[in-house]
Length: 168
Image 1 (cartoon, rainbow, N blue to C red):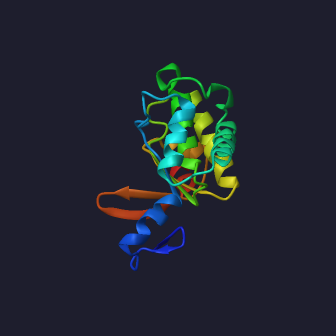
Image 2 (image 1 turned 30 degrees about the vertical axis):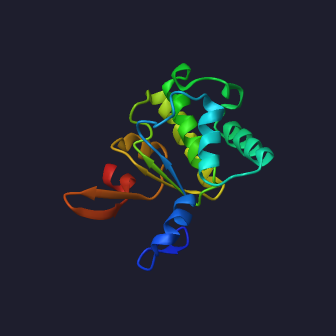
Image 3 (image 1 turned 90 degrees about the vertical axis):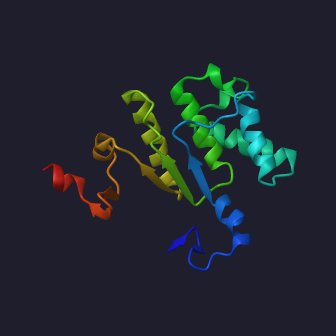
């Protein structure tokens, strides 16, 4: 298979970091740096992935924080954010390197239904801008409310499902 233009069968070890830069990951348990504010959580990732020019770093951070509606909270510490805001920060972090694919592991699992709905709307916006969003979830209501291609992993088998047909 191919992911973000890389043939996984022929992927060389030295190309793995380049593939990783084309994939954004949204963790269920956030994995935020608790000793750094919102801005510094993102700044740290950018420096670690090779960004050098301060002006470009600041512009990119401002852009992704605006996209996830956290532009006014860059000075806040993670513990000062709600669960939904923390998840949006994780999404912002995943978008820093302008990935082609966003992998989200149960991104709404720790959120109330209204906040989860906001995260799903954000994913729709991200997908409409050309980034593929691949999300794992146990919450079929989300898939019903935000229809897209659905793949079921069950009992060692993988199959594409049409939830509308199955629920009818």
